[in-house]
Image 1 (tube, rainbow, N blue to C red):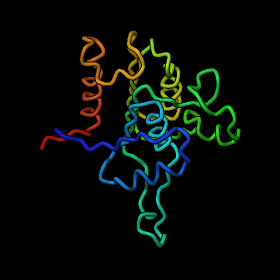
Image 2: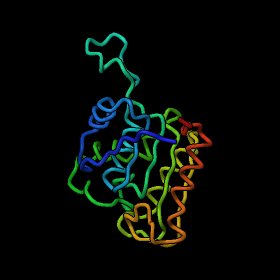
Image 3: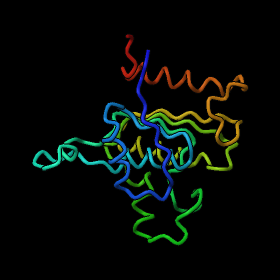
Image 4: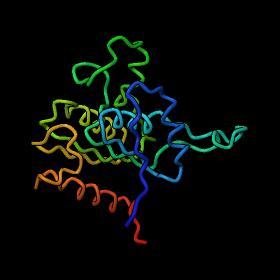
Length: 184
């Protein structure tokens, strides 16, 4: 089984247009994956700030939708507002902050999403994932959320932890259920 992923790890302060450029650049990759706070925010931004493309555009890139087919968010920053904001946003324009609070930008067109977090994460509190999950459910977007009790921020695949290392199995099951993994 194989799946191409677009790894989004640009800085948190990236403009809202940046995910479109990144997704179009790697259009062969169907999903947006965020594995760091900034990457998680950028991936959730890609899933909430996309366009459908413009059929009459002169540039062929602009004709293509930049909506990812799915999102995988691992301990993501989702909101830039207190009390759950990770950092930044303090001196930013209020309208920009509001537009980049991605839990407020979810619609029924937001891609199906898998979220993974730990309750012990103090770098990015799990309420970020919870806010996004609740917004997805409200918009009737398929979503799956896993919050493990223990584990610091940035655990990655957690190969040394017998419990945390199971989260990739949960992801694999979700991808299979959604028909996103195909045998080659």
